[in-house]
Every structure is written in structure tokens, then in C-alpha cells.
Amino acid sequence: MLQWPALVLTILLLGYLAVKKPVWLVPLLAVTVALEISINWYPNLGFLEKILGEISLTRLTSIVLILAAFSRVLFLEEMRKKLGAVLKDPLTLILLAYIILGGISVVYSADFGKTVTETVRLLILFTVFISIALLMDKERTLMPFQAVHVTALLLALISFYEGMTGNLIWQGDKLLVEQTLRVNATFVDPNIFARYIILGVASNFILQIYNREKRFKWVYMACLAVLLAELVLTGSRGGFLTLLAILVATLIFLPNKKAVLWVLGLGALCGAIVVFLRPEIWERMLTITMGFAISSEQRLYLWKAAIAIFKDHPLIGTGLGTFETVFKQGYFDLMNIPGGATRSHTTILTIASELGVVGLTVLTAIWAAILIRLARLFSLGHDYLGMFRDYKNEYFAGTGYVLWAATVFISSQAEGRFFEDPIFWLSCAMLVVLKLSRKYRLELD
Picture 1 (cartoon, rainbow, N blue to C red):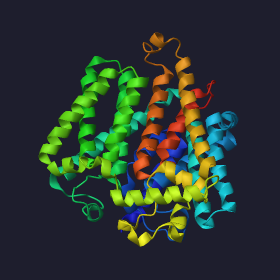
Picture 2 (picture 1 turned 135 degrees about the horizontal axis):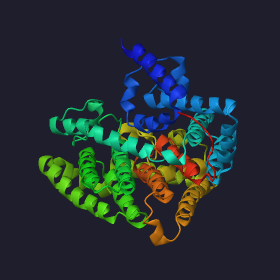
Picture 3 (picture 1 turned 90 degrees about the vertical axis):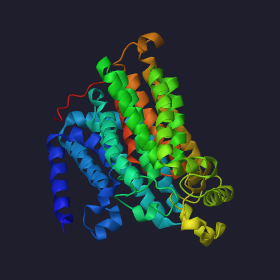
Picture 4 (picture 1 turned 180 degrees about the vertical axis):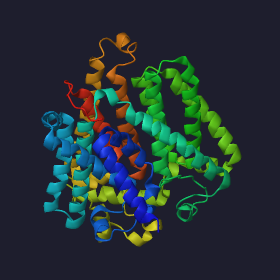
């Protein structure tokens, strides 16, 4: 009954931001990623949903973000100049190369329809990436970190409610199939919720560096405690491994070593408390070597399928988005897999099977471009010691976005959602923004 009014209100609010405050659409996108539950807020749009998929706040925000950016390209010469600079950026060109590769795979695809669908989806996300780069500037690089940090903390209210009562506000019937109750808050999957919490942890590290007032130090530390407690309640084994990897990267790339040690100490304490209250979570953690979001037998089955497909089509794969189709065509009997999963749940293996060695090469080039970009930002920070005394250095923000991209990539080895996550494209867009050498004279708010 209220779904149509909710849709109209959302469009009006997004339209207002597009006209008056377009820059705010970028941090809003980072917030909406956490609201997968929003697919229940809006009515079924029939034919449009077959094209766009289920209507969610994230999709609506993405569409308005694109319209806000490219409408200004039409009328502002300075924006057109900025668009030219963004399109010439090496990271932009490599990301586009991956999409072109997926598009070319239509020629030999095992499933023409799915390859076209996946290519179009990537093109839309690439357009979101361009739009973010157009609207944002270096002075606003902290806005997405602040948005994710606050959102992750607010979700603690739902997380603790679910953890203490055992009542899941959404999709409880699906998650209770497992022996261990895993909080998912506003997410479809507890593992994706864990990913978002880790993004919040990385944001906390960056915001601490840029805020030198001592009175806020303990506030940020307390926030880390809340985030870690949330992470434990998700019961995500992949999430814990991802967090460890991000903490190691933080020790290497950022100066706030004490914050990382604080996380490790708090993690042990929060983990002990939660495990004391919910011992079944500890039992789940003990099986960390046996699998992640799905059973070890099922995961091993899917890995074998992906490897077999790659061996048969090593150079160019079977086409973007075709893993499920090829899987059903006879590599393994689908009915033997508990739950009927049809994805490899591992990004690298999925790309290997769908786009072969060429796809893996482009993926490697993407990460090379990201790390080279970070090295470039480091070199601009003067000498090593001088850089770590300069708290306004762009290197820190760049490191934060690299940590975000790494979080999405590492966790996708257990869950499988990498290029589909808008956070990855947002991170890449901000790395492009940080590289732009000139300041474009744009009044966007």
C-alpha cells in the first residue's frame, strides 16, 4: 500500500539532490549499498524490473547519479574538460578494457543472453564510476569514508537487537536454516554485511589520521569496538580472514599502528564476550578451514567445476556471465550440490572460467594500475618521514580507497561479488579524482 508513495518520495528526494546537491549523491550511494532491504520498499514495476532488476535504493541512486553528472556535461564546458581527463586516465582505460573484453565474448558465449546482460550491467557500473569522478573533487575525498563509518555504526543497533533476541528483521527464514544464527541487519547475506563492517573499520583508520584532536581519539577507538562486535555477530569466517588481510595492509601502508593493535586487542576481547554469550559462533569459527558461505563439499564441487571449465577453455573462457550455464551443461550434476548453487563463489575462478587467461591478465592490470596509483600518491608526499607528518596528504585518502577495493576483492574470494559491488567502482573513481592535476572550476552545491 505504501510502496508507491515510497517510490515517489524517493524519486523526489533524489531529484532534489541531483539539482541542488549532486555531490551528496556519492556518499549517499555508499550508504544505500548497506540497504539491500530496500527491495521491499518499492512496488513491482513489471517489464522494467526485467531490464533493471529488482528496484532498490542503490539502483535508484545510481541512475540519478548518472543523470546528475551527464546532464552537467551537456551544459558545462568545464565538466566536459574534466570528462576528457577522466576518460584518459589509465585506470579508466583498463576498467573499460575489461568491459570490452566481456562484450567481445558475446561472439563465442555459451549463453548469449547472460553475456549481454552482464556486459550491460558492467557498463552501467562503469558509467557510475565516471559520474562519481566527475562530481567529486579532492576537497571532498573524506565524505564517502564518513558516510560508511556512520552507517556501519548505526547498523549496530539492528545487529545487537538481532544478536540478543535471535529475531532477524529480514530474511530470517533463509538464514535460520544454518545451525548458527548469523545477524544480517539490512543485508541479504551476512557475509556482505561483514564486508561492509570491514569497510567501516578501514574508514575509521583513515578518519583517525585526518582528525588530530586527542579528545576524539577514544571516540574512534570505541567505534572500532562496536564495529568488531558487529563483525563477530555475523559469524562470517570469510569476513574475519578479510579483516586480518586488511589489518596487515594497514600496518604496511598507514602510520597509525596503535589503532591496528587496538583492533587486534579489542577483537580478542569482543570475540571472547560474544563467544561466551553465543558459544555456537565459536563452533562455527572452528570450521574456518572447511568453507565459508556454503558447505565445504559444495564449495569444493564448484571450484572443481570452474577449474575444469578453465582447462577446457583456457585462453578466452566461455563468455562473461556464463559459469552457471556451462555448469548445467554437464561439467557436474547440479542436483548433487546442496542448495543448488551455480556460482564458483570465488572471483578469480569465475573470471578464469568465463574469460580465461585474457580476463585474468586484465584483472591483474587493474590491480597493477591501482597499486601504481597509490605509489604515485606516495611519491607526491615528499620524503617518507615528511609524508607521515603531513596529515592532509592525499596518500592517506588514496590508501583508504585501495583498502576498500582490496576488502571487496578479498571477500569476493569467499562470496563472489566483486565487479558487481558499487563500492569497488566508487573506490576506483576516487583514485582517479586524487590523480587529477588541475582543479576544475565547478560549482556543484
